[in-house]
Length: 406
Image (cartoon, rainbow, N blue to C red; front, side):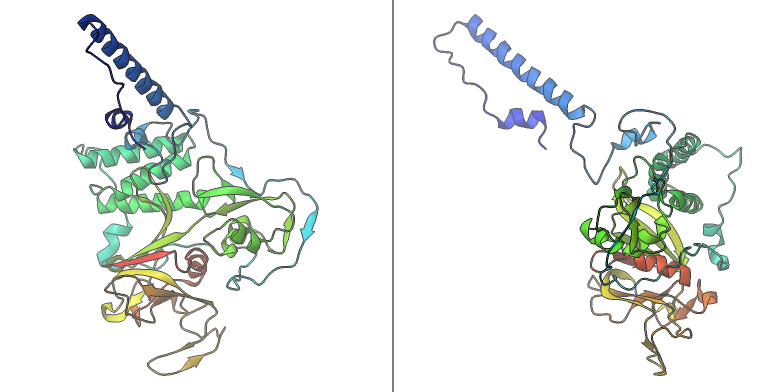
């Protein structure tokens, strides 16, 4: 959108004939033209900054200087306590039955989804400082420059949580996580706290006002979870919608039932030296950083064989995959509980000059949870079984990006 000043520079100013007017009249005409332009500029400025009138920018929801305002993410300017609303809190009505179409990926979900447990495997010694934030001394000197701004973001996040404003707290902690001046210990703290916020904002059936990642959908006649996912263009497996809403049978939805949906797509960054996968939403904070969801511990390829670079999820996601060991040629049938790659396979396709010709890499489960946090695979990325099921539902072919870094 062009600024008013640009419009004034590029527009045509009224022609004023000076050959037959006295200097006094010419001055009067010039003042009147200037006054008209000034009024136009003031009117445009008032319209642009008036609440809910300016166009929304998906890359920057609010100006960066507004992040320290106690009412960030409150477009109506009401600094009241936010009430968490469960999407499933609706009156019971008649159940509507319909034929279920062919499922997407045959996702299996237990009525009660497995608990996501982070960090159950002890971390190697060299990563202890990253995983266990050290206490900050009361008498520590106050930081200066950008590091001071990072601490202010943490303090504002604490204030937002004290006011029961989790969406604002997530915004501020996400800014602190991506701040180059934030120390590794404080970054670990930010990831931990953002993961705790995701338990409510993302992995539950609650929809919090102001959250751009999730929203409420009202079930219409003939709706099934799979058709809702396609109709709404959701870039997640419908099994994840089933998971977070606690729906036991995807074929049985109540008419007018309100359920929580998330748009997607989601992306991952895998840090080899930390044996960690960080999950991000496509939505961004005011500074343009993708919103962090949660960290997952991973196992990697032996002798550093997991290749770095950019990837995309390929069209080779499989539930209960069969597998043949390329070294021993031993074959495991589909659904074999002794299959070393577990119950889920997420194929990866190289997306840069370093990875485009590398085949057969992927993210999968494991029947050896003790290998998480070590280099033990043939190059692929391993996750615990309960956690790979969640990643399977969130990382989608062709749209989810995976970046592997040292």
